Image (cartoon, rainbow, N blue to C red):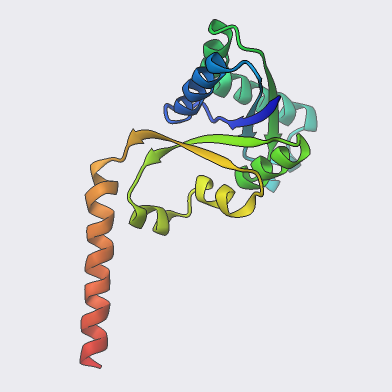
Length: 170
């Protein structure tokens, strides 16, 4: 049985990975699906003035909300799955849970972005790819916005041009 970790934050892009996993399960029911939602930790200031149980309850509610659509999709397809919730850095948690559960595959979806944008932004997907020994299947999500497709590359190009002119004049 193939053990698959599917990190999900409840965004429209994360649903592309779930749809892919559902399609794969329909082809072969030999998948053990593990959903993971990672919540950011509270700042020290908030942690100092709130109880551990209140923080845990808040994180639980946020996870339930984030995974609601994902779980509905899997339930509607009658696909069994396990839910995992972690608090911490997204990349650290994804890599650690995949290792701890002995996953054979991580399935993530990401917005369609240019290579230049990916180089500049250091996305969660890129960091997971760099840090895990588990194979990662990246499912393309929503197309990038006009700013990401045109604005960022144009800005980087303009910046590089200014640096080149400055270096040439020095």
